[in-house]
Length: 376
Image (cartoon, rainbow, N blue to C red; front, top):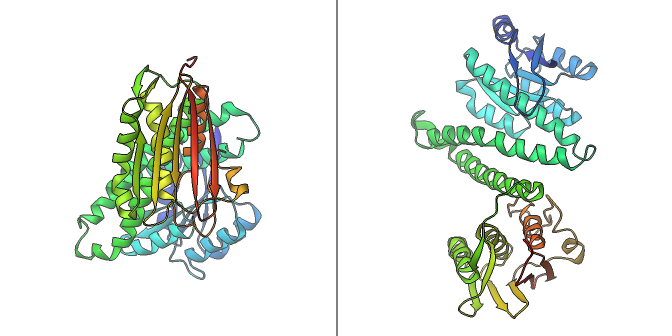
């Protein structure tokens, strides 16, 4: 059994002793780990004492009250952040200080626990933070222990994020619906930003699941005759609201019927990613041209945009996992860095290839070539 060290920083003896009692015999275990985890509790009644321990023997997890004699909890949080220490911080706060807790999470706190809290609420929070701690530790092993650990990590992370996503989304919607009272409007910006992040995390989950299933070979495939024109049009229709918002015109150029023996879901992923990227990285008032053509041997799909384009060194890395092009033009564009790697892996599964030509400030063209007959 492995022990995680928790430091409780609170000037109220009752809070410290209560946490000791709640967590004394508490253990957590996860299906993906072979052993259980328990917790060793340490205490500090001031921020200064907490910093002394942080400097000499930093804990794994810190439960941190803000209202402390001397320096405040947020000052301790800032110290941990400045030192770049590997400590997961949970703020302990009153209901009246919800705005403080939200700001603390923006400054590096993992979560907050409003007091008074029940034993069940504390245990749930500790269980979630323990999962985060373990998953974060697993990420450090990814480059050391090969592809299988990587697959395991992606699968676990995807699975474990689903429940907290639903819980956080429900909590935010409660605020949005003003169930907490008439002052909820003060948090409207926080709500909108949180929901936007949740949507981004949900997309990350789906992309990670796709990548994991593809690379592990565990994705169940249903090969049948797929009408590529219909799939492309569906992808365009799906992206149309965003295209209208950006004033981007999307045109489909093709003859009436082009079919391919394929898994329809995989073909949808290819079109969805290429078309959404063409809209996302376009200019307002731009254009996207989707062309599908074929001969006896090959089917060629091109997606061209009139967008911001890429430098040659950026083109060279766009198919690498988790790579997102970061420059002043893209800083406000959200993404997971997995869409194009997934597209490339799917195209190669069909014995095809994907290439890209891009000119900065002129646009980008992706070309996918698929053999008419594949060896599935």
